[in-house]
Image (cartoon, rainbow, N blue to C red; front, side, top):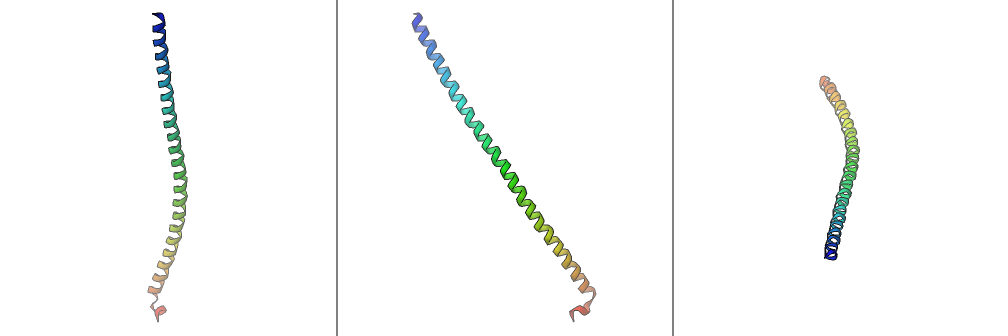
Length: 84
């Protein structure tokens, strides 16, 4: 009778160990995927900041050109003899 109880306990321990390993594997996969997601977001942020910075520089250049054109047009409008 003692042997049967021992086998049952061994089986229960084996099942518990197997479940523990499965849980650890699941947690490991979740952790890995979270780490990958975090790495992607960090890289995405850096790339986006770089692209936005370049776009901002282009917009600044266009704004300066537009201001120059506005000054030239207002100067030409104030002096109609330029058109003759």
